[in-house]
Figure 1: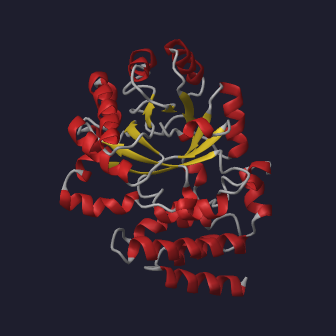
Figure 2: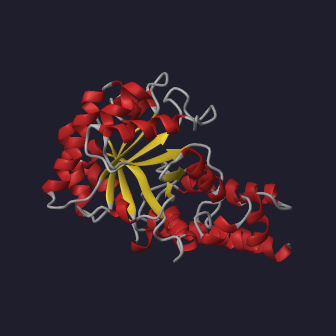
Length: 342
């Protein structure tokens, strides 16, 4: 098997799959400014999660395929798929594997009601037998494509309550190379602090299984210093970061890791002008790859504005103007005027 996981330096860092966030434009920017020679073997990117059922429908597949486009500089990159139909998961993974991804991850942690109602995402926590069938189906699909890439799972510590002892051992019975744990239940969403102490319990279960499965912790990670600290304290092989990446294209870079805090990074290593110029570039890539092909509305891009535009004089007023834009050209004009008058 071509298992990229075995070549990663520990601790490694993962970009969390976030719907309407980790699209190709955002990943391109993070790869350009965050992946450097020093950390290329320590950073793994995830795509947005894609519906297996949708990839099995000709019309839907055409609309969803853009979510599975990526650039070579993003490698290693993992495609995340969700679904509760084994046959569709097999077909979807056959297609996804053929696109050249380094691995496939199965989403068993999304708490969104529309996903759970299908029995997918965190809904699979309630049906361990089906969850195991889904993992096996993913492998069958990969083999049907004539390939050998690793399968991993991202999940939570339980659905309504913590159920590590009942849930995690079921996953460990299957052939997975890595297990990412969002340290909250599905019911808790992201409304309570992540319970990192549970990592040690899960690590013991992996050791008991006798398998070489990498453990990735996820929840409330602010910067790379925090990520490294958590990896060391709790014994994770890797750390996944979600919201902490917003507005920080340099998040995974070596200079970010060497900075004391995210605050000091944003205030000293990269000035306001540089951040705003990268924001313009981000919107331009969004236009080119997502807006013009009519894959996404420009409103999707606007959720990044608050993260980029903060912490400096005039930020609030600038954000108000940016929220009224409809494309990258308008964004560029407003930011150019702001920098000229600053």
